[in-house]
Image (cartoon, rainbow, N blue to C red; front, side):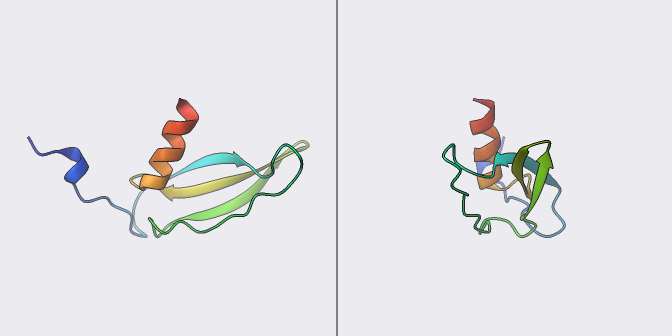
Length: 76
């Protein structure tokens, strides 16, 4: 059976995408810098507000290693 880690990841513009909401600023109010993801082409971000809370929603290809790290880090 082939090793799944050796399979080619779909990180092109046509890849399915997923999102994760991240804090827009540190606890002291300092805003975070947002840099583009160099691992997937469909990456983009949007700022969302829910009441007084502001967050950054990052969209990545679901196979993107950066996205997988964020999702697995948020779950753990």
